[in-house]
Amino acid sequence: MLRSRNPSLDIDSLAQRIKQWANGLGFQRVGITDTQLSEAETHLHHWLDQGMHGEMDYMARHGPRRSQPAQLVPGTLRIISVAMDYQPQGADPEKILADNDRGYISRYALGRDYHKLLRKRLQQLATRIETQIGPFGYRVFCDSAPVLEKALAEKAGLGWIGKHSNLLSRDGGSWFFLGELYTDLPLPTDAQTDDHCGNCRACLDACPTDAIIAPYQIDARRCISYLTIELHGPIPVALRPMLGNRIYGCDDCQLVCPWNRFAKLSAEPDFAPRHDLDDTKLVALFNWDEKEFLNRTEGSAIRRIGHLRWLRNIAVALGNGDDTTASRNALLRRREHPSELVREHVDWALKQRQPGTENQ
Image (cartoon, rainbow, N blue to C red; front, side, top):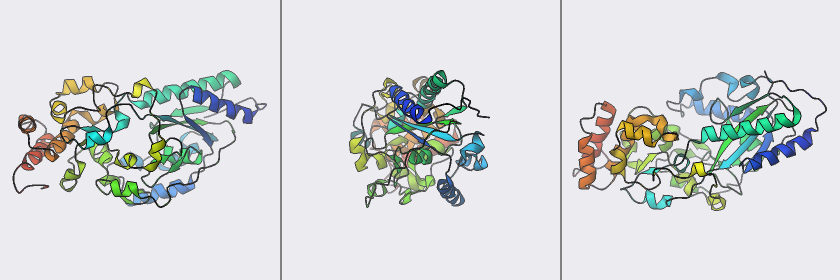
């Protein structure tokens, strides 16, 4: 139960200081909103009713707690929403996508897992507030609970939800992580930002699998991020050729977004690419055994998919690539893998190299 005391607080002044403290902790954007998410709740229910969440059953769990913050944390009055830029310095993403000998990994996953870093910084923010005003009620979140992060950030004025469903900022594009501090402090709220997508449909046209079925509507079952990360079983055969060399996530809709001209490179050392994952050949990645996979993905978001799905994804990418001796031999070495999931995707990849079996 959240419970704050000290009725003599200068709430307006406190809100300004909170934003300054958050900026000092490395958050580029900070906003405050109330708990009213009825419009987002309607959109969520429609999306779930259409089954577009696929196997992400957690999106349907928790009842109203996802869209009604006070149901998740009783006593919540305001949410402090924060954003931290993550665009890393490293190999040119478009160059990697054009080289089918290399594996493309979504930019957010090239460095250390962001969850712990953002939660730690948010906790530091909460501690700073507590030091100034005394005990107050709060909970820290970063993609770690049933929270409608993008809807809250949009209401808090951090940006608007674009046609690709990512949050967009006029001064920072979409390359940033979100986090929240639920609180019982009656802070003044910020104004919501207008939508600035206009008539642009670059993201819809660029999606490799046509997962953006209409502006602001994503069928996750077709999304490469879902297919390579959330999906536990086989990747649908019809979609495999469309994955190209994307082995963990997909950034295409962000790479073509005009607003990302204004995105800035992250200064956070933890978001810098690790183990050359921004520019590594598929064969080298496919040759990792489970021990090496676990070692090289320690502290990384990639580890959550496990070694088998890692191999599944790379097998598809190899099947979409050139028929080289190195790639064929790498696939043949995995043909008798103990996992049926891996074997099936390896066999598919090998068949792509036979005349007359393209995209089968």
